[in-house]
Length: 414
Image 1 (cartoon, rainbow, N blue to C red):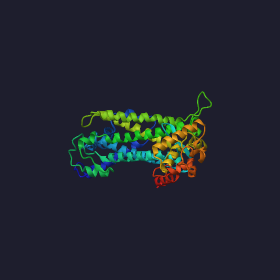
Image 2 (cartoon, rainbow, N blue to C red; image 1 turned 45 degrees about the vertical axis):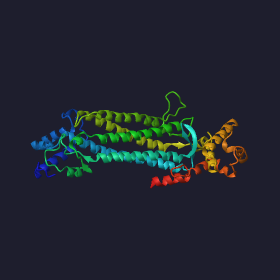
Image 3 (cartoon, one colour; image 1 turned 30 degrees about the horizontal axis):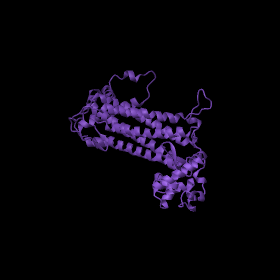
Image 4 (cartoon, one colour; image 1 turned 30 degrees about the vertical axis):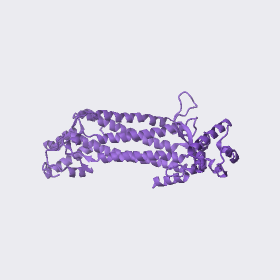
């Protein structure tokens, strides 16, 4: 880069030697070759330098001029973070696509929505699945942000104080595909925020996968019977021949703790760490590699789970009809007629209590029977005593009305 360290011939010889080393290291080991035992140098940078010296002589000793392992390691890790972030982003998009595809198939499937694990109001299954698309979309944004903050080259920062040679660090950064060069040499070799950010994005992603897989576990239970899994995504019991266990979903749910542990590990490593480089930072690779690998695996497994789910449409609708899930719609109906909502809420609560005592559903009441509770009930209330009527009423941006869900699907696909 015009630093005056190498002649043109020296640069060509070093380049040729490095290309040969690259080919040798990329090739599979020969039979009986133990590269691990032969790797006497303590890290890859020193190994490459020693191999280069063996190839081209003392000239190979110029390779490290103006450099430190500190800025080289930071550079390598940033290159890895950018690549890994792109892989995570693509895997997130693939899972989003799987959810969108399944939501498009279930645009008319009604299920109970829950709060406190209690049946609350009817929603569309498509709307429920699209909630996870929103989560994953935010995850993708976090990963993209992490990629952006990793996209800064530390090369030329030296061990901590900067290079002693007139290196064009901005040109180096561009040559390596980085958006910019780091502005402070101390921070350049000590910064691992980009590692924290990527592991954090992985951790939040895993929380979302855990929630989705937790619901799959519930939905495939006999108590819910909302869905089933193909044999390839479940397992049997070694003792009980009647069992079909959602093990893939359970394992994804369990892996969440592992990735969260990687994040805690890195937070504690960095806590109170003085500037600039400390050997403590060697721990960053294990945590980052594990978090990325685990999250990528879990994203792929979850996509297969989503694709393989077989929904029990009738069971979902039957559950939505139970639990008096249209009660809120009746309270809203009375409010639209002019009754204060708090009064409407109290009145419909009394109606639910009466229906429970009579072992009836609210939808079974005639207009005449409803008018015994309030004269505000008129024949048009019949449109609000059905699941479809309750769904249509939620016709606001982001709501579960069929038209709004189709709108959301079209927007995400676009």
